[in-house]
View 1 (cartoon, rainbow over the protein chains, first blue to last red):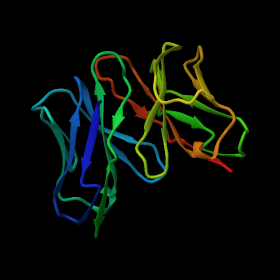
View 2: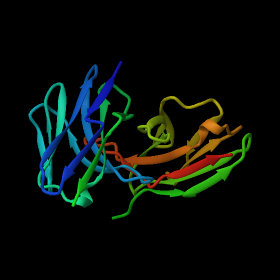
View 3: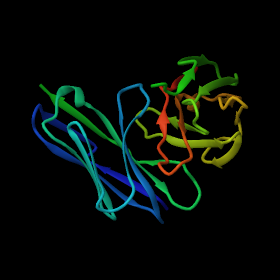
View 4: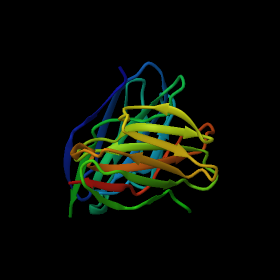
Length: 111
Length: 113
């Protein structure tokens, strides 16, 4: 069964304290791995798509990387406005385009 | 840039009533997905449509049905509502190219009392 596990469940950082979120996955075949940001009561906001091991993408203070078993979302010098739940999702190759989500990491950045 | 539009944003219904949720995808997107997110849960895939045809089906109850219309908007119809149907319902859209990127709408919060 396709599975996505995110860790930690919650993370508290001080402003400027860099860290990483982990997303490990077990799938029959990976078409793509997606990172989203979700604020309370709002829709997931697309951040990145990664397709193959070794791929990296950056956007402002965020950098996403991918290996054959996991992905990391690195947050450099975070600000309070980076506080949100970060969701990782996979799309399995072979037909279905549905996203299978992890439970998310709730990030809180204190000023 | 235009985003996915969902209506209504909030909906309160009683048990056994029906509800219709609407989704307007990003212009030129040809695929629509519906997800359900319960309190404190991750989004769960319900159903998807590509070019007005159902393309995939997930854990959608038989009480729910959906369709995509000629203008590509989609509607999720929910009947015999139960308390457990209370959740956020998201619509996402994508263009079936090589990116497979799905863009989500703001959601409809359904409360069943």
